[in-house]
Length: 463
Image (tube, rainbow, N blue to C red):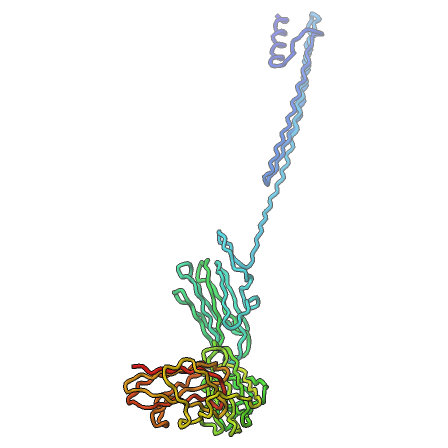
């Protein structure tokens, strides 16, 4: 009975233990070692590493002795080693890169004009009178244009664009570059903004978009300077006229409603060449020449060109002081005037002399084509011809006005009644007259102010 009990006890003690109950020395020894190492590493801002270590040791001794001399021994040794280590590394970083400059990030490309960066008065594009600029406005973009002005000058900016492509406006800043003066904020395709300067300095126009704008435009800036009197003032009447020196240019300004008078002394037979130089687009000027009495008109230059000029020869029997009058006809303008005096020219008259009066007139038989003639100082050329009643009289002379201004007149049969005249300032003169009665009529060709010149005469009398 006792042996059976011991066998059952040993079986129970070895249950679940590998190697227990094997043969040899009547004993069994079992050693169990468990080692677990866990490492977790996460590098997404958090790193975690875990290592676990555990150690357990169990020892069991059982000894049974019986009268039969049987010795039974059981030795159990359990060793469990667990190592645990946890490491957490958390790295959290935030990087924000913000770049803010002039311009805008709108989600699409807007190609600005070549004048950038011109967004304020300090970097503005300098504009002179009548300058025209093509530009482009991008969202939040401003284009500045600076204009130097004097007190009283008037300036106007005209901005043209297509309103359907984006609304563009314009404002004006004072000479400090920041103080607002005025603006134009219409709803059409053109904005205009004019201003009269209240002091000397540089004013700034700013072109900008209303709202989200990506559009082309064109701006024209015009300056109308205040007319400032020249040093010759007051010379608005003949009594205050300025004397011109031979061949010396004189700079002057003709203001609106303000004539300038000048005087030139000439000896008998001397020539006078007067030139007034100016830019016609800034305002038209005329020049008039008067006789020594200051009242009798002798000649004028009234073209639509940049310059005006008069050529004159003082009559051989009359020297004296002649008068010149410069007057503006379209606003005001600056100019330069020069009077050149030359010696009396040698004039070779034509072969019809003497024909200086109607009693000595050269008889002509129409038609006449291109008959050559020559006028000299104080030398008129007279011609006579017959015309039936009801016929048309057509006469003309061709010449170069710059060489001396000539005029053409038609007189009645008495030789003294003026019927018609051609007195222009062009190269040619022409007239046409209907003869009311049959008879001998007269033509007179003469130089203005004693001018000498060659000419060609045409005459026809037709039903």
